[in-house]
Image (cartoon, rainbow over all chains, first blue to last red; front, side):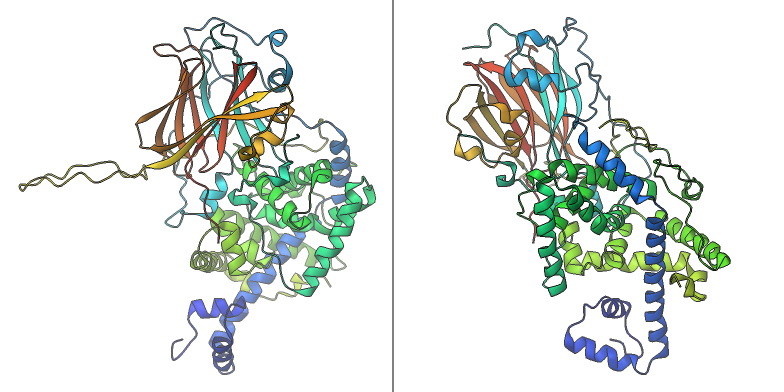
Length: 188
Length: 228
Length: 174
């Protein structure tokens, strides 16, 4: 703590209730006499009130009843098994071979029948954008951005196949590449 | 022998971290009340599910807004989240609190949302849309008793959302988790999986940027922040 | 989900954000007048290939698979038995392929290409018989550290092969 004023860090921690009892006592003692630090504290409070007001207003400007009605309606409908998946091109050397449900059975048929059947490759990564996360992109939102693994390109060669996601009830998912294996030599 | 259910799975992901359970007695009571409502909802009690929606839709909205930029997108996320909850509450094992579970769903959907390519529109334009029956989009808020105060307030809210919009996502997340959700530094560090020091630094910079952008509004009379 | 009355933006496939910088050190050699120093050791990334035989008939389920979430939900939870055929730990170096033997003389080849700026690993996988491109010529994945993706469908001994591939490790939480 400087002789004259509370540091930015201390002031913020005081505002957010993060000081231990000793620090809190010192801060209170300083604030009893320092108009400038009180002004800075008040600014933090004002900002907080403004933010809460804006989020509150945004939430108030919504027909939540309408949303609830749609939620109830949608929840009665069957959940899609898969998300939209990338479309993939067969390699140029491949025969045109389509998925044939008749030759699959059991879980395999269920799995692929639930997936998008004809897919096209995404292609290469796009050119870099100017978007950066700055110096401290080592964790949170960089990590938040990468919530899932993702299939970016598949060449099925001569086989039919599909790409789909296994969805979990917390919203996360696991990508699966399914390849229709009708190779006569596959069994040992 | 049937494979164990999903609740037994040990897989963890970053976004499965949710705010730590509070020792606050009020919070503990809330969680206990939720257990009873959730149990009813699991049996198909529609009124119970509605209670959960009523309790948490605004918090879900605030969480989503911390990740996605626009209120419309946050509303999409909230809607999708509660649809998921509705569909899967029968499978909810109670290994975490309901709020934790909802939080994870909202976060995952919000992150999914911002990964998709979309056209950015001016938030102000969308606010003007009126809500026909069942459309359920943003509705114009009915004016307060003081109409001019309501207009000023709406303009101010617009400026604040613009300022929030201008923040990088890692700043927007901490400012909303702190100011709206009231998470502590430790809780935010756990949720976002970064050190506490990084949280404090980001919060400081986020506040500094917002203060710069909203300087005129921070100096003036703020009695419009309260709905009289 | 049926059509919603509320207007929703069309969902499109995600676009990879930025070209990642390599975070893993590459081996390098010091140029010096004195005897050359040993090249710096490259950092390896751990990985795992889990090969499972899933059966349609009632049978044992390997207890080590109880933590594999994907087997507990649709569609894989339709299988009645699961057996681990192979579980191989890997130490992946960028640009260096590793091979795992699979049933029916096939080999799974995995190459870690780079670590993306978003933290995910860009990996290439192929499954073929030697000198052939007859099963899975090429698969590219942006793999979240520690999370599996699956390649499935190969027939074997009356069951189906499910291959779970994991690159990197899950972040540790306080």
